[in-house]
Amino acid sequence: MARTLINLPKTAKAGAVIEVKTLISHPMETGYRPGPEGRLVPRDIITEFVCRFEGEEVFRAEFFPATSANPYLTFTTVAERSGTFTFTWTGDNGFAQTESAVLTVT
Image 1 (cartoon, rainbow, N blue to C red):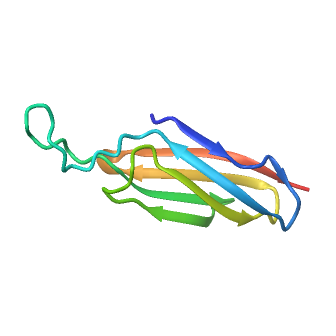
Image 2 (image 1 turned 90 degrees about the vertical axis):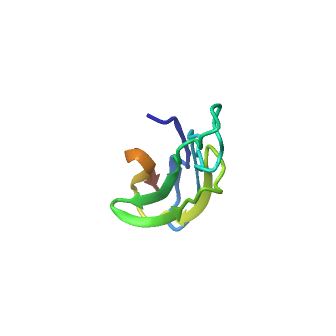
Image 3 (image 1 turned 30 degrees about the vertical axis):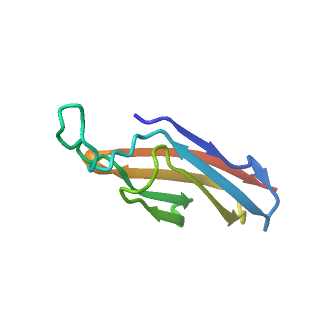
């Protein structure tokens, strides 16, 4: 299980633009680097990130081998109502990580 950090406000006024920041700990091995024995280290990257608010997709990103280790994303969205954000990272070798955070709109 990877370590994640999610930063978004706990409360916001209706209609406010909020900033969402996410970071996930992952080595992002490209598959092009030789290992200690000279053989290529197998590819192991996160391939997709999806953020949903109450089941509705609000942000999506695709990752490729050139993406750095521990991918950090920042994006904005509009706080329309209270609810739960769900963050899902998926990748090679069956990797999947899901986290959630609650936003209260006043």
